[in-house]
Length: 90
Image (cartoon, rainbow, N blue to C red; front, side, top):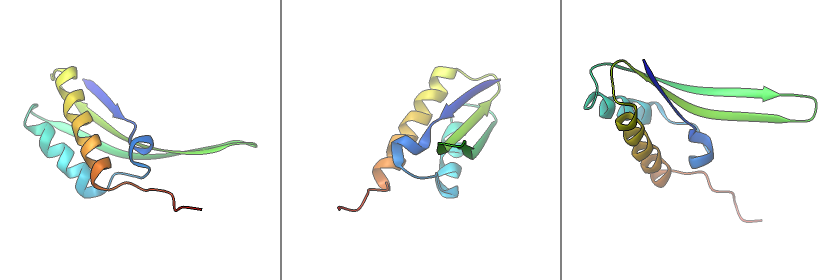
């Protein structure tokens, strides 16, 4: 099984929407027979730090990892270009 992890948060500043995850899954079906896509939000906290990580995880059997990676990368860049969170000016 091939697994691709898209670190979506740093690129877009937000989580992937359900529609975006569906769009990625449909694009991946064009290059592989079956795919599973997870949108994941992970909270890591400690006494002096806190982080929230937004990732999208793709799992596919019998697929070329480089092809999957290229599809995921193009999708992530497109999503970030379409809708990103930008800080308000101070």
